[in-house]
Length: 228
Image (cartoon, rainbow, N blue to C red; front, side):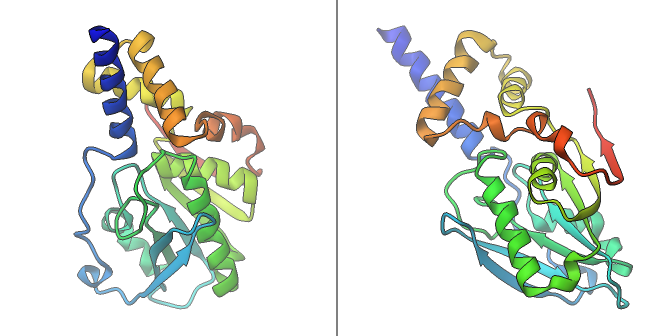
């Protein structure tokens, strides 16, 4: 009984590590630091969460925009820190996914609920800045790259994409995190944690994984940057 209770507690704690990134970056980077003009935007997801973002027009008029998706524990400011130089030639659209940065939300799911964030951001951009979506490119990092694979397959409309460190599947990335951070065996601990995670969420995040959508991505130029 004690061992079962300890295992259940460990799995519950493990799911919290997934829901709440343990190295959540603070909101410390803003466009003013790079002398960039911008517009603050807000839009709701289908489940009613307000997400916040930035529209940053290029230094000179252009029809070339970039749609950004940040990684797990990151935020739009961290992406801007890495890629602010693109504003010389591209319009930039960055937003914080749920439970990250300045956006609302109580938890992250590394892709499944974030699919709603991607859809809401793209819908808002199409409705409010349709000219920005005619030659739209996509840049995704880690969780954002996973969101991008599914987003391109489901929504289309992107002319090219750069995807850095996309993972293959939700189950496998959680397993790998358990190995890297805590040397956890898949069975029984990670397996039990995934069961508890699905129960707490009320759905299975695995079917939202990139591996199930990669074959349906549009035939546009793709640049993948990834390790093993």
